Length: 290
Image (cartoon, rainbow, N blue to C red; front, side, top):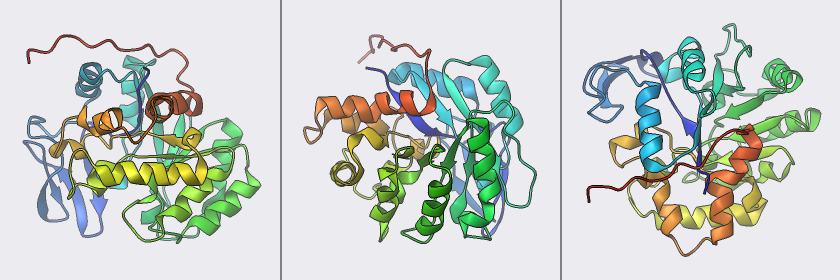
């Protein structure tokens, strides 16, 4: 089995913003989150750095062949560091530059670009058409986190109509625990729009492992757009404050509610096709002390 993680984060130094103010990394996995201390990473990430070497180590242990580095405005722009990470592990990772409203952006050297659409001041995505067109013209993909429900689906649908060949990955599984989430999933009926599950264990965290409601939601989404359009994502490292990296997909491996063929698609096969992971190899497990 080839397993691909469609939604991870890295930062050399966290220097971003949230609604309440700046976001700065502290120590022991904690961050100053707009004036409130939050556990942003596992406590063994001691110095505030969320580096690619630790991610690759987690991937190797969990037998994950490849991963996509998306970005978030709350972490600050990590373009420079992601280029360094890609140079170290060119066959293991794909990287997104960050589109931050009103700031210059680049596609050079990147596989795609990330839009935190839910946090844009101008929520009408057609007003940001030029970045979608730039990605389309460059043959890059767009990773996008939409506002809850159908608040931005109409404007994204209009963009899809103008740019039908643009690859778009909708994040956070459409914010599956919020009203109207299936409207985001319906967008994946378009030929080059996919949905990835980054953060699904966070959204169902109150239920916790093995996330039976998350499994039901995956099947519900498949009923809407087909398993060929769904991809797994971990939302590493934030979700790792509650679970291990392997647990973020192990609940899919072990459920009897999804067929083995559909597990292959969801956990890796679809992402290999969408992101173009042409050189990844299956990672073999090593014997555990337990």
